[in-house]
Length: 429
Image (cartoon, rainbow, N blue to C red):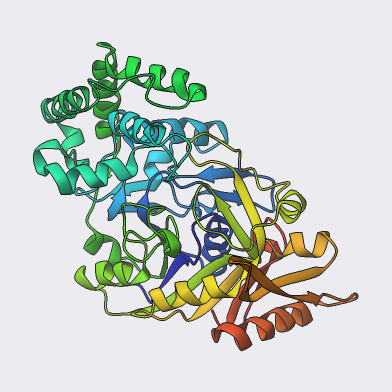
């Protein structure tokens, strides 16, 4: 059984820098496996000191180091995405990515039909977006709750073409009926082309056979394992979670939430139910500032700050998630997220993207509260100057001291660059 498991959870709405943290952590502790939970639509970026870079979705962020990935029962997978990601990894020199992957038999599979539904539902909202990544992961999760087993494809069923075809046909019939009266004139003029593209795909008779072929192909490649088997490995493991606490289905800021539960207590429950009774290190991740890719509340949003911070973030604007916004670190949001996760208190914080603070004036703005000015929220900002010269250990102590005074959890990792060598860690992780 593992000596220790590190659980990595984003404290915000996502985009917190989990990829770099998981990669650096897997190097530092010589991880035996990365356990994934959440949704396959995540984009966890990794840059290595030897020049490789990739945005991982379903393979774990230790893949470049040869660390295998286990997709847990709490992971909604995308078989089409698995094939695409596998091909991309091959182009980077990983000969057979599937040899580094095992999958829980009960993983829910998101299909391209869920993807179409996700996008049509967002397009229905017009100029009042909820925000979605638009991959169908949330739709797959909701369909299981609303319509049950007969409509849900599980990973173990990817071994049976008949089961794939039967359940995909049910999904197709359901969505064709659901959107039979969906008019291209129901939404914004700018969305008409997107509506047409998705409806045309839904009624394309060649689409279903294509999906069945891809799913069956993936079913031949994946290795099915249970979490209890994975937990029998030796060494240490990292649980890499998608989304963030502020998008938790119940504790997030509705309606801008995911369909899944993102709190670490559900990770702990999964591990304990599988028989793990060892040590768990519960780590939170957040950028040195606020970021939100898509709709949802963000009191510290600042357009000038955004343009200064975001170069190099590799996050494109799109119709589904909306614009990317950034602003000073918001302690109120941090405290809310920490309180939402109080059932499994965090052992420490990994603060990312601090190199952007250092590269843009060395002034670290932090919102400590709000004021009501003529009925509008105004963030109250303190600015902390990062003086030169400063050693890495002095910087770590300074940043950690500021944060621990405000949110009462210790700093465990500080990222001052994109690679694993740019992560300053406390002596005891």
